[in-house]
Image (tube, helix red, strand yellow):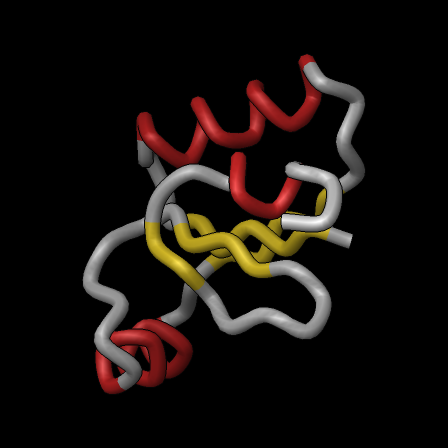
Length: 71
């Protein structure tokens, strides 16, 4: 399952969620908290949304890479 980490009032976050919905891809939305934001920043992820897939590390930007079969 795709995990999308979001922040409030985030236009890009809303766009990623619409993309996933439009393509019938299941995802779970996880709002970023101050603690999780600090952990993401420590990992070098400085922007939302951030998406991750099973057996993959989080990546900033589009969830498209997660939805590509075998990708």
